[in-house]
Structure formats: C-alpha cells, structure tokens
Image 1 (cartoon, rainbow, N blue to C red):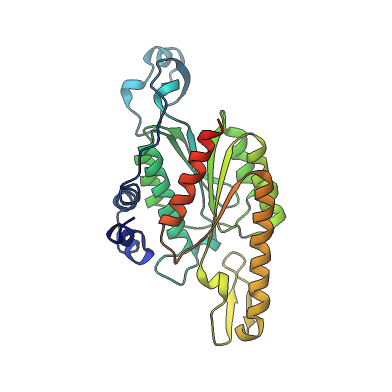
Image 2: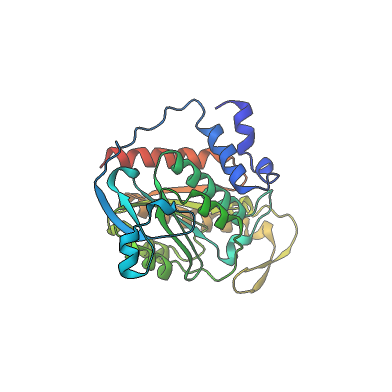
Length: 299
C-alpha cells in the first residue's frame, strides 16, 4: 500500500469526510488497489429461494404471479447471483459513544462496517446489516443489491441503549437460514463469559464468525495524569480515580479481559481482532480479507 493510499485510512482524515458512502468507496478502492480480485462463483440460473422485497431491490426481480396469490412482494434469488451471505452486526449501545481521538468508537465502528459492506459488494457477496444494543434495533437481510441501503442506514445511526449481547445475537442466529459470514463489531462491554456464551451460539450453527473488538486508546492505557471522575456511559455511575495509582492494575485487567477472549475464541476457530481506534483502518480490512479468504478455502 502506498503512502498516498494509506493517508485515506487514517482516522484523522476519515473524520473530515462527511459522506459515509464516499468514505467507504475512498477507503476500499485505495485498500484493494494492486490486489488481485478474489475469484467468485460462476453465475447459475438455478432458483434458490424467495425473500421479501426491500427498498433498494430491483423491482424487475419481483415475482408478480406470487404477488397475485399472496398480495405481498417477493423477490426471486438464484444460486449463482452471489458468493455468500455477509451479515454485519454493529453494536450501537451507549458505551460505543466514547472517544478521545478523531473518531469515537461508534464512528470508527460505523466507518469500518461501511467499508466492509462496500468491500463485500465488490466481491459480489450478499450484504445484510444488524444493529443492536440490548436487542435488535435494525435488521436488513442479506441481498446483493443492499449495499446502498446499508450505507444509508449506517449514516443515520446514533448510539443509544444498554449493551447485552445475548438476546440480539441469539435472535440473529435463529434468523440465519443458510450458512453465513457474520462480522460482529463491538466494544464487548460486558463480562467475557457473557460474550463467549452469545458468540459461541453463532459459531455452533456453522457460521464463519469474525469479531472486531473496538477500543479507544484511553481504554487500553488509562493515559490521564490528573485525578478525575470516570463515568459509566450506560449506568451513569461515576467513580473518582487517581490514574497513577491504578494504571498498572487497570492495564492488567484490560489485558486479562482481552487474553481470555482471545484464547477462548481461538479454541472455537473464531477470528478475533482487537482494534485501536487511533490506528488506520487498513489493519482491520486486511484481517477481514485474510479471514474471508481462509473461509473460502475451507468450504
């Protein structure tokens, strides 16, 4: 990757681009410059399934005969239209609204989600989006033509509720009708055992699961020099701390949390990536591409 390309991936530059679809295109086009395009399946005309019509779908794909019988709009899909289903799961809980740099965790995660969606669209994958806090708030089923709908939805999001992975992840797992790639982007702001229980269910259903653990650098290092009050964004609770007295213990607790997740997910064959929001996006995109190509080889 050239220096002129890499500059578009720096969070400080990303923060100045207001259009999310332009941002995703800029980042991804730069990232894949010089890379060989991954091979995709040949087009087949074998009918696969019906699914409900969604805004953004080509109306020419509506089955009007089925509409005349059911009074509902359904779209025909074929086996060779795409590579695979990609479900992008984005945490929009209150804790994601924290940030000390150019981008908050939420804005970084939203940008990453947009870039992964745009990238997958280039690979002819079927793209879907799920946003959640303690429940599913938005569910766009995967489809080849949903990239614009996904980007538009991401552009209007704001973080809001409390976090609880178990219910939304369980709901999503039960809705997946075929084996999928599930990319889960969150700060995993809850005990490791809760995270493992929730994510393990997705993996047990045969999905390829890729995790991006989004953390602000201040959450990793506690860099403050003066005493301060830290507030839990979800509960509103405050605690007064003297950073110099707690820094080593704090770093150890954070490292222990990450290590426990990493060990457990490695045993399950789940790709787990810790992402510092001060770092360029190319690291996250490269990890996704590596996991994506590996899953293709294993089919």
